[in-house]
Length: 359
Image (cartoon, rainbow, N blue to C red; front, side, top):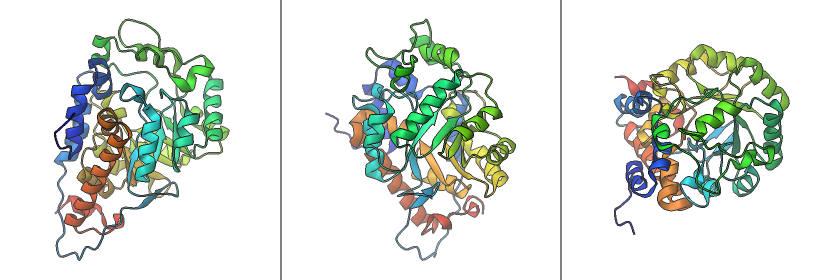
C-alpha cells in the first residue's frame, strides 16, 4: 500500500516506475535515439516564463472550452496512446471512464489492447479515434467505418509515423506485448498480432504494415471516405499546417510523437506559435508533448493552442490507480491550471494571451 501523498504528476510517475516491468516502463517512457527531443519537450515549457498580471480583479475561473464545437470542462484532453493493458487490467476502458468523469475529450489509439466498440460504449462525448494509414487502404477504410459505427466523432490521423523511430530502450529489451495481449482493433483484419522478432516487435509491426510513402493524397482520400471531421496529428512545420488545413482538416495537433520518432526535432512549444500564426482561423490547433504542470497548459493556451493532449501522465495514473489514478492526474492538472490562471490574472481562457510570456 502506497503511503506517500500523490500531489503532482511527477509523484505518479515515480510510483509507476516502481510498479511497471522494465519492458513496459521503457516502452511508455522512452524516446528515439538519444532522447534529446523527449527531454526538450518538457524542458522547453519549463524555460518559458510567465509575466503575471496583478490587480486584475480575477473572479471564479471558467476553464470550459470546445473542441470542434464539442464542449469540454477544461482544455486538457486524453491523448491517444497504445497498449493501456500494460498499465492496468481494465486498459482503455478505464481511460475512457476517467475522461468521462473529468468531462473531457477521450482519443482512442488504433493500437489499443481493447477493441473500439466496448471502449466507445463506455466513453462519453466527445470521443475520437486515432488512425494510422495501413499499406492496405481496405484495412484503413474498414477501421474508419467501424469507428463511425461505434460512435467516434472525429478521426485523428497520425502522420509522423511512416516508420517507427528507433527507440533503443525497446531494442535492448526486445519489447513485445505481454502474453494474451494483441492489437484488438486489427485482430478481425488479420493484423492483431505483434511479430516475435529480435529487437522491438512494434518496430517490425510498423515496418510490415504502415504505409511508408504517406502523402497528401492519403489525407485527401481519408477526408473523402469519412463523414467525420479529420484532425491531423504530428505537425512540425507552419507551412505544412496551413496546407493541411487547406486540404480539409478541421484541426491539427502540433506533436513530435512524444519525442519517439525523429530525435532532435524541435520541442512542440517552439513550433506551436508558428503553426498558430500560419493557420489563423482555418482550423483549430492543439499541442502535446511534455505537458506536466497546469502552468504548461496555460503557456500552451497563451501561445495559441485551443487545448493540450496529455499522454504519459495518464498512463502513470492508470498504472498507479487504474481509472481513479487517471482521474486524479486529470484533476491535478485542472487544479494547477486554475491556480495558474488566478495568479496570472485570468478569469477565462480568453484572458490568456501571448503577452503573458513577455514583459
